[in-house]
Amino acid sequence: MAVSLKGDKLISSVPSTKSKALRINLNSDIYGTFSEIGAGQETARNFFRSGAASGTIAKAMSAYDKDFSDAIYGVEDDNRYVTQPRLHKMLGHEISLMEDRLSREKHPDKLFFSYANTVTTIDFAKQFKGHGWVGIRFQLDPLEGYNEIVLHLRFKETDARLQQETLGVLGVNLIYGAFYLNDNPKDLVKSFYDNLGNDQLEIDMINFSGPRFMYVDNRLMSLQLLKNGMTNAVMFGPDGNNLLPAQVLYKKNILALRGSFRPVTKVNLDMYEKSKQLFLEESKVNKNKTQFIFEITLSNLTSEGKINERDFLDRAELLCSLGHNVMITNFQQYFKLVEYFSEFTKERMALAMGAQNLIQIFDEKYYRNLSGGILEAFGKLFNRDLKVYIYPSHDKKTDEYITTENLKVHPRMKELFKFFRDNGKLVNINDFNKEVLDIFSRTVLKMIIDGKEGWEDMLPEGIAKTIKQKRLFGYSRSRIKK
Image 1 (tube, helix red, strand yellow):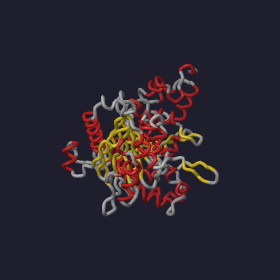
Image 2: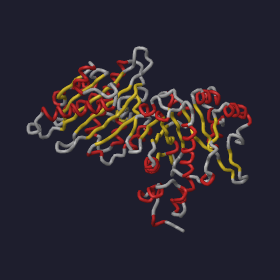
Image 3: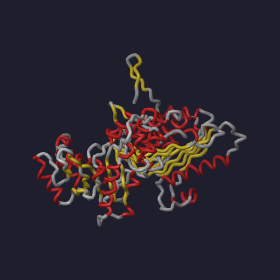
Image 4: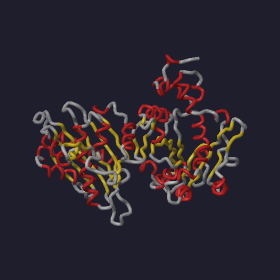
C-alpha cells in the first residue's frame, strides 16, 4: 500500500473500501445493478453500509437456486455456473433490464452499469479453495456503447467468510476503478489489490473491451498481473485475447517449449515440430486433448531491471501470427513450471529444450535455495508423468552434435543424468534439420537492429514480412546496410 508522510504520521494514499463505495454512491450519475452468486452479496453490502446507496443501486440480487438461475439467465451448454459465459449472460441480462425499465428521457445523464460475480468458495473438506468470475459492464457517457472488464480469481484464504469479504472488497475496487481509473488501465489493474494482500487472492486473467478500451492490448494487461505479483502465469491466444490457464490446460496433455523467441526462428519451429511429432506418437497422448504452449519467463523479458513492454509485444505479435498459445510465467526453474501444470492435469506432459538448457537443469547451483537441493527439484520434476525432448546443439570446433549420448554434465551429476536418460525420461530429437541448427535469435536480432541484410532467411515463412510491416524489434527500412 502506498503511503505518504505527514508530520510524524504515515497517511495512506489508497482510499478505503468504504470511501470508494461512498464516492460512487454520492455520484448521482452512476446507477446500476448487482448480481452475485456463490458468496453472498458482499459487494452490494459494502455500498449499502457506506450510505446513500439508493443513488447507486437500482437492484441487488442473488439467484442461488439453480432452477431460478437457469430461468433468469438460461442453461449453459456444460451445465456449469462458475464460468465466463455465465458471467457474460448475467452482465448482458441485467443491462438489458436496466435499459428496458428505466427511461432515458427521465434519466438522460445516468451512466448505467451492471456488476456481476459467479464464484465458488472453499469446500467443507478444504481441498478446493474456490475460484470465480467477476465483471462489470458500464457506460462512461450516456450516448456511448458499454465498456466491459472481466477477470478471473482464485481464492487463497482457507475460510469461506474471509473469502466472501475479500470478494466484496475486490468488487468495490473493480467498480471504482471502472469509473475513476479507466483512463489508465495499468493503474486500474493495480488498484484491484487496494486494501487486499497477495495472500488473499490471485487474479490470473483479465480482459478489457468497449469503446474506451479500444487501444488497450489485453496481452499487456496480462503482463501487468505478473508484474504486480497478482499471479505466476498468464496465457493468451492467437487472437491476442487473454485465456484462463486452468481452463485451457484442464485434463490435457501438455507440451511446452521455453525460449526467448526474440524473434522466433527456424530452429525454434523445427524444435517445436519435431518434439510435437514425438509427443503425439506417445501411447498416453490423446491428440484431441493436447495443448502446445510457447512459454517465456518474466525474467527473460527484463532488461536493465525493467520489463521492456514493447519488446514483449513484438515477441507476442510474432508467436500469435503463427497461431500459437503463449504463456508468460514467473517460473525460472523448470520443476516449478511442471508443478504449475500439475495443478490442472495428471496426463502425460513434456518439455522441449536445447541441449544447453539441459546442462543447466543438471547444475546444482540453481537449487541452493531448496533444502533438498537438486534431488528435491528432480523429485518434483520427474515425479510427474513427464518426458523431456532434447534438441541437439552444434559444436562448430569439433563439428559434433551434442545429444544426451555425449553431453557433459558435472562429474557428481553423471550417474543421476544416466539414470533419467536410460529410463526414457530424456529423449533425443534425432530427426532435426542440420541446416538451421546454427541459427540464434540473438544473431538475428542484432542484424535487424544494425540494419544488415540476410536475417529474413533465418526466420519461418511470413515472420520477416510481419517484422517489416509492423516495425518490430527496432526494424527500420532506412537503416538497411549491405
